[in-house]
Length: 305
Image (cartoon, rainbow, N blue to C red; front, top):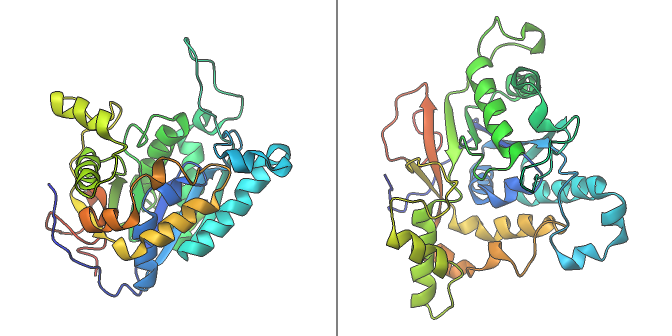
């Protein structure tokens, strides 16, 4: 279910949004323009980073030349996160767990001792529940069952976030962590929506550009029973947030994560004007709502205003 009408979000003073992510930079590649739009509209927005991204690779060759990045990647990523948060105007909190890394090989190696993805859900969720009870968000956005993409930290973030959403309002759970707070709505981010990539692909061709999605779109159109990205959970888009006016902030926030984001890479393959003209939204799936709302939506706070 996709709503292609242009409906800008309204004034949002007094409303609070929490986005729960696995690593620093995930908040800038998934929903950043949405967050910036709500901040401008007067809402409070908090990002929770479950790990410090300590085991990430340096993905930008220019940043790879920085000795500091090799000596103290964790410290550099904290600095990058602070810069991105300032660009977006959001509050930010670290959950404090250690990056699990992305295991590779056949068979896959065991995850490192102490890694976030090895923590019991009810233990890791305690920190999120404490933040929920302090910040009192009306809406939480997180990943789907496959983590948006199947990184062990993303999958665990899904488990921890949904557990916290379910139990933060229960006075019998974690009574030492503050007054219970029941979050009104839970969304999954759909940054990898196949519909969006297909639309951008044809918009690029029409504008005379070479599309970075040609191969994936061709495979999908040959067999639409299979997702364009095989690990994408088959959720339906229920909610589109118009945020084209904030794509430049999204890109600035991404570029703040200079060890992780290549300025010539995937995230900047589509010119901003093509993006704004052909897909000026960011996409979400409403998973749970404790208030009445009509689908499709153009506002994460629909039913809560």
